Image 1 (spheres, rainbow, N blue to C red):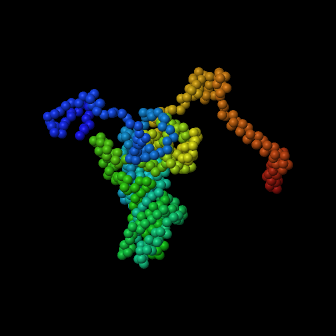
Image 2: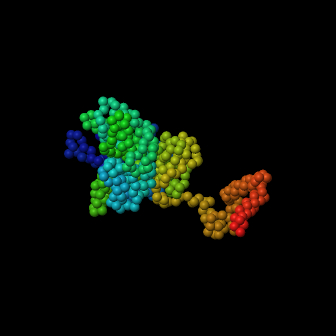
Image 3: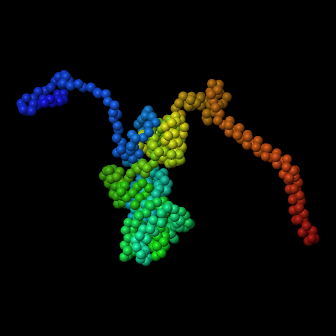
Length: 474
């Protein structure tokens, strides 16, 4: 039986393990077998199925290019300093009954000692459940979260008994799709008739002795479940009302996705302030990228990040990878190579168009999320821009970069004045106005002379009317 031995290892025979021990020389060990890299067609794959947040399944995205220079700026959303982590995070709070949503948000703001907080949709004081509270930089996502779909579990009561359970189930099935709703008497919005969509509903339980039931509903943002319970009672012909309500999902965050209580937030902040332990606080607060994992992604180069933060459009040369299924006018998220969300954008190209084009605008910005100058500025560093800065410093161009009397002829030959077109357009507009005025002058009823005569006649008539009463009184 042959044994494979490592360099410097001891050869131990099976019969005399303790007695016969020999140290193998490195040269003799190399003679025992061939050490070489065998050719293989298989390519080592990177498994990113368990990577966090926006980097999940990164290896399955379409590759635009892999050639870019990583910059030592920014950081992974999960590994940033605790101060930045808190200011760019959100909390999935289990709202208690009685306090209003505004009170809960203001309490969290006071506990965490942050500047701004916002929530993903108002819950009535008696309603409990998921309330997404965004902190500082994450408040830029509040609007998109408020418009996201919601799920509720409601307890309702019927005023009289129904014949059988099937009627209640059929009544809930009829209350699907687009519905007319008027907010209740006590509500935070104007009481006007509006249309809201109920996507799905299901009766979970019903007690026929007490005429009390529980149902689950998935609906559009702004739907009133209290009104839905009243409509259910009217459809059954017995009348009904809502007893209790709980929100079980807001957007993509539900009860199972790290729901925390107000006590958890208070304890996490106390542990951090008194024991400098960040672990509890990092479990309570999640990075804002967790709210965007359902969006289609476009990854951009590090050199293009700051330009996007200043409002530049997403161009194809700056794209690293992009996802399948991107459609026109779809809301997507722009991501860095480290997994940080840069901005929400509106797609101007589909996935197939991005794959087939070498230049063009892939997306326009909707809401910038990342702070400016997190990454260094990488535009205006080319030879043309550098030459322009030098001429401005030497006084050969004015402070706006426009030519003056000292501008060299070489620069004037390559200089393009983009204002000339606008001036020509202004001249065309003035010509149109002139032609319109001359056309009016040709009309005998609209000529300037006739108008002035009519004006004089009106003035004379008013003077005569004022003098006439005086003469009668003399």
